[in-house]
Image 1 (tube, rainbow, N blue to C red):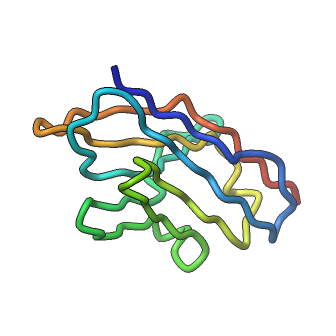
Image 2 (image 1 turned 30 degrees about the horizontal axis):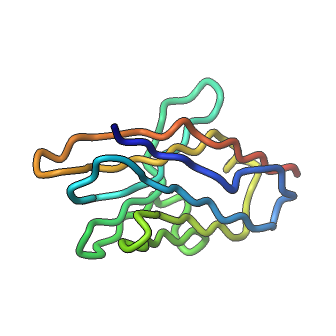
Length: 117
């Protein structure tokens, strides 16, 4: 059984920083792409950032130059460093991973990020 557990969310003032972590545990053969998505109230879930096993990066235009995704393969962990946070970054942030030779997709339970103005 595979579990993704996020941490690091919270309340921060505009301009502040937060670092999200997501640890993947369970029966893992290999972790391929890992990513962060977010969903604000009344909006669809959207991709924030994604990193492949080879290190290829994808960012949403709205977070480029402010957020950085990274991964530690030895720890089965993906991070999202967020700087210069804005109120519009307020959302539930979800960890996502493609695992195994069939690239089965998994989600974490989400962590709330709230940015006050």
